[in-house]
Image (tube, rainbow, N blue to C red; front, side, top):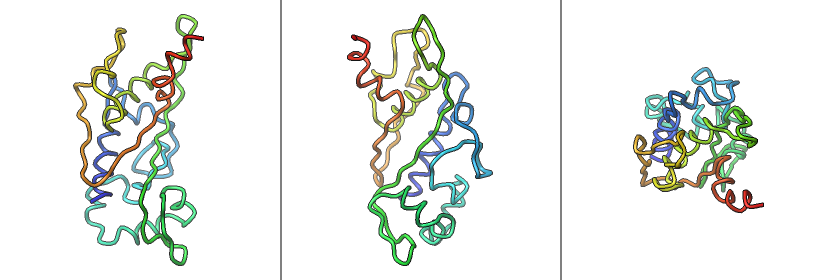
Length: 176
């Protein structure tokens, strides 16, 4: 159930759209998995990011142990337990999506428009920000009403994004 919910979340994140740009358009490219062009830290690659393949897997732990080394799994998983270098259980999973740098100078300020707004949709999707925080006053603002917050009874999400720093400290930093 947890991995199925995680797969559903991943597929919804991959489909987030800011003015026609999805994760695939904004990501750092260079995946070793043929199911995506995006470089990411994501154990769902073991099932080629496919919900049907995951659902048909009768032994997900065995799949993970055959696809990844114990060192790789240790990097993906938190509070993992291993027996004979094979994972047996874990409490947390870390997934990272990497976006290309789209920073440019606008009015003598460094800005990252597409990535910032896509990340805003991402943070709203995973419940890290409220809808009111997702509608900036400028003309480029993203309306989060096109996105629904992901709901799961099996996983808890703790999210961060590059823009999280400016969201939290922006007024303090810009006041310098």
